[in-house]
Length: 192
Image (cartoon, rainbow, N blue to C red; front, side, top):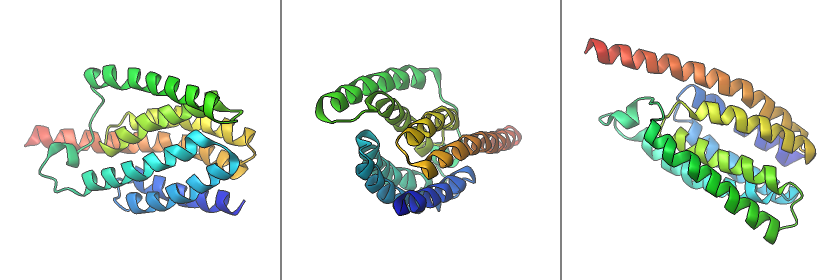
């Protein structure tokens, strides 16, 4: 229960910082990945436990990207997922889902392998979009968090379940905030 509470608080704080486009999100996220990885190992949610290792690495990568000088457009501004990027991303999500579910069914005693693999695959994509400040990250996080809420309530991790419901609302807030920021950036570009 203690790791459920601590992981929820630290994760909530990092999401708050992400919505605000604040670089403090990255070190706070590193702490959250460690706490949550241990919690998921304890509860037998193995794909999510492995996902926390990916989050740890991608958090370092995202922190690097967000900390670079703003000379490059990609590091400075919010962008939209292009059609070409979508054509690459979504088949990879499907492939990763199939691989993860097969691994979970054959190598673990997980009784939530299908939803665990789905949330993990969607989270991988959403995290990569977050690193690159692609606004679609919030849409993916909304649906992923709704699925996670169901999973966590089923696995009797109620605080994380309620946290995921709160994240659904934060995903909407993040999308709206980033949309405003993106509109401001486009307005500045058109003036320049």
